[in-house]
Picture 1 (cartoon, rainbow, N blue to C red):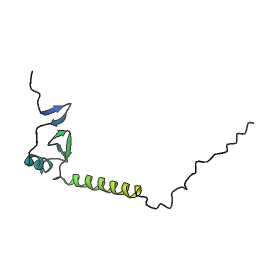
Picture 2 (cartoon, rainbow, N blue to C red):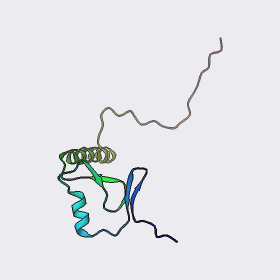
Picture 3 (cartoon, rainbow, N blue to C red):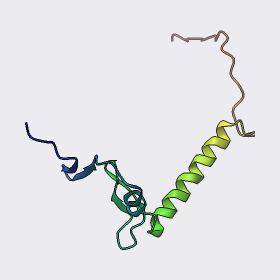
Picture 4 (spheres, rainbow, N blue to C red):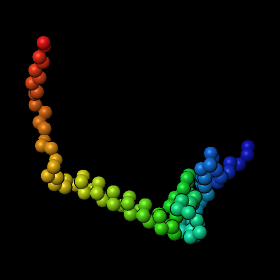
Length: 97
């Protein structure tokens, strides 16, 4: 039986299941001559290249959105919030003309 390759591409998406070394991990996230996305050191797909300034903007926006979401979930006071509704009975009047 043939040995399966541990790295390559499927439908244009790279994969790599070789055990990563520390040097390969560090060098894969910092590639100054490359674009914003680079191949992951382990797994399937792409990751951010931290040597590219656009990656830092993506991280800042994602961090800001996460912060905003956690603050609103923590029960921040919202003056425009609708009043709490009680789940009591509701009277519905149907006018048959």
